[in-house]
Image 1 (tube, rainbow, N blue to C red):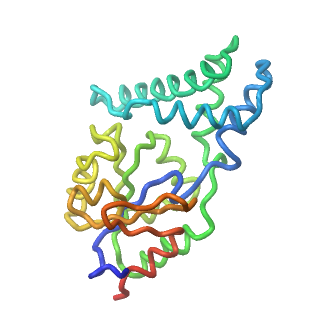
Image 2 (image 1 turned 90 degrees about the vertical axis):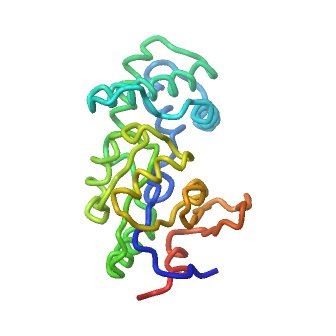
Length: 228
């Protein structure tokens, strides 16, 4: 399938699309938890994290002050990580442990770009396509983008905690669009907002719905977009 025309702007998700955790969340959590006496496998922690993350409410908060939003983001993650170890065994010193892992994931060194990310962004930039990010990530994302060297590509970064709406709500995409006044390419919720949706499904298996375009890697996005 080829898009009918060149989009004016492409919105990307962040983690899991442009970059990913080095190793796995379970491995990182275990590395920091060992000194607190935690003795379970990284796989067990990873499974608990997936469930805790899925059970968490959308990261949308009833505050507008930037510092208050950041405090709410941190509390949101505290609840997620607490839920992980509630499932597998709580331990003394959890507050200090959480401080350590929260700070670790704020560092660009905790993340790595997918192999095709940089070349795809450079190609889209050369095609004069505006780029933006729409993500449920928190405000630590800004420093991560800078540290990974890709912040320069994006004309906008729209975060759920600051937008007052979280993916998959169309409202967060509509807010991002107002910053570009253009048509976008993103995921299924973007389609609900009147955009063209492209699902990046790196793991395979699951099927797209509602005629949604699916790609296995970012480089495939270039093959479905007509060149100028």
